[in-house]
Image 1 (cartoon, rainbow, N blue to C red):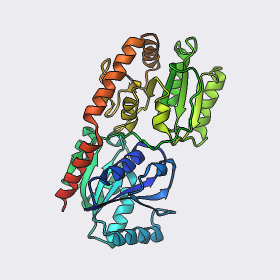
Image 2 (image 1 turned 180 degrees about the horizontal axis):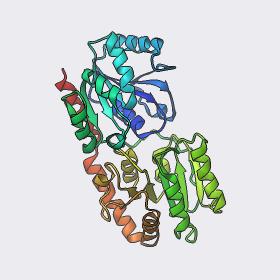
Image 3 (image 1 turned 135 degrees about the horizontal axis):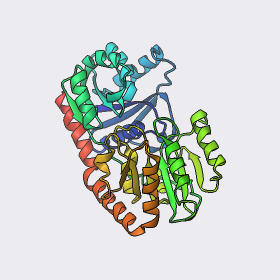
Image 4 (image 1 turned 45 degrees about the horizontal axis):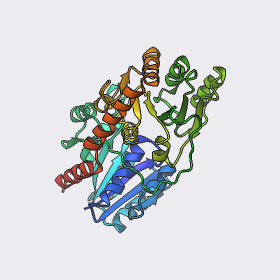
Length: 357
């Protein structure tokens, strides 16, 4: 079995991290594992293991014939059986399959808000005839796929996180050690950073000398500028710091104490697993699969992402109860280690791949 992971970019997002993690994980189980990026490279390129065959297509537009032919040539040259297409890359995979019907496509849906969007998924539904299987990151998406798509093989596949042992420390967080809160999320909707900032400002964090560290891709657009302006207007520039995309995420998280996720919707955020592996105490939004990882007051704290007061209360609670905070982080580390391992997920993927052969 020879499998290629297909992803649109290698910017530091959840779907992108999973594409890299799966490609790396399959190397230990299969004779051949590859990863192809269609549109844009990014910071995650450095996380691809040397034994993963990698290619960048430089796709310029949706129907880029040259990119399609390059990918087709890559498939033929490496005798690839399966394209594992992540997110919106499924359409490009379909265009290639039209030119080479023998190859099988498994689509991986990471879009946590697909079930609730009013926008139709007519193109996706139509081309799902070509899928040999569909992977979803939570049960709600699995139910949606079973009802809406023309594919009988629908599987829930949990995300997993791995520790990057080759990371080199290049990012050093500001603020006092032992009093650092981290939010690992690209600066864009639906990550809901403004609610986090409002709650942090309203909390006792500044009084207790805590700092907030925002790590994630920054386009320096209106969304980003509004956040920075809010920090400046509230005189929190010595307590809130922006870092942009970073390559040493695991080492960054080990410098923190509390990890926060405030998205208004999520599929299955790898971020929560990374927080757990880094022994952070977690405050998480209660959307998507989050509440399956974070059990309130057991493995972390949950809050409604639209409720600033609730988030402020969660922050204040953890700032003042270090013993309970440590207990929550210990419970989460154990839960993630026992339930979201690379070995379990990669073995499940191979089993489902085989069913299509």
